[in-house]
Image (tube, rainbow, N blue to C red; front, side, top):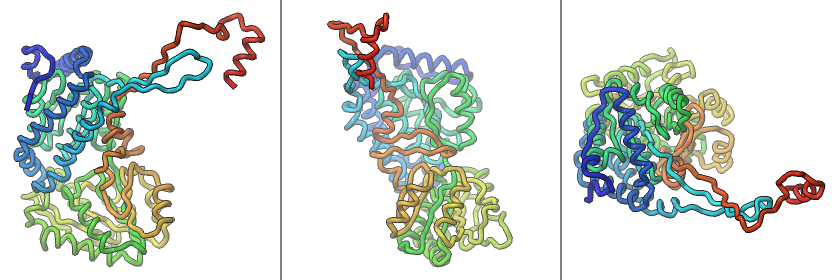
Length: 482
């Protein structure tokens, strides 16, 4: 692996910043901005080499990376690879394949009133991008937007989450070992880091986290009119109709809710099930959970755990607090010593129950039954726009109605979560679940400012636009612009 092969002075390359105040963060942002202004990151070869360097570092430290994910969240090596590391590799490969093409200026037609002219759109990086990532997918949600920003030609500062301490420390170490700190720099999650970052001017901010913190990010960004992309969350509904293939639906729902112990921003948050198939669906989901994780998931080596005691207590509280008619259909128990909670289905739930009042972010599936699709849609519309929406049905009409009539960030039909794995499509939210998108070409576009430029010829200079405005000029202008 060729490390630190970027054009740089030896002294600058070896400087590793420390952060103990807002002034330190601001100074680092200025160092990065100076490096960006030097033009180093605009070079396509530079961008590709940076992506290859990142991939090579990850490849050579795979065991450590997967162990860190296990330490933070209890993820098995297999789950850590398919939901985190593998997706980062795919994003890097996509950018390596396409970034040269995507970075090329392209011409567009020019209207007759500006003849003779050449109009060109020039893809241009923003400058210094800040990536703020969460703890639930601490590798993927830090590195995928970073890959997109690097491919677009930006410098990147990133602050990983404090809660996922092992993975976050590894990411900061990667930046220090593999890159010039003026190009890519990790800001450790110390106590005052969020405040210091908020006092610093960035050229673009990418944040993944909760809507409440997203609002704070926008407030800070507004001080400098900094553009932002927010990937937030919400209560993603999963609709199961009476004509759904129940066994397939149950198996896929059990998988999607079980991944990362339900701590997934696009996990099915609650079930809307036709009343005629509700009990059978619940039984089949419970069956598959036992098949996946054993009779008691608390004893499973591959069942992840909650990130912290705080979140363990919060999710257990959602299970325990409910209306008298609601009940735990399966699961419901937790082990505070290991921070594990059994995968749980709750039936008889109403919209007034605490479990329906917030994004669950845990292995709990409340089930609400409906008799007509309009009734199910009405429930979805009572909530803020979700990040994802799922429907299991064999009806083409129902599929079209869900996609066309409901508002959400993205959807998977007859499965869950998979739409975000296709980086030929953008991934992002709507309203309370976020703004903007990334992944693949959409991610490249997010971190790119497209400069519109018009080169007006000088070999002829029609005077139709110059005063005085004679009747002939007025008539010609109307003819050209009608």
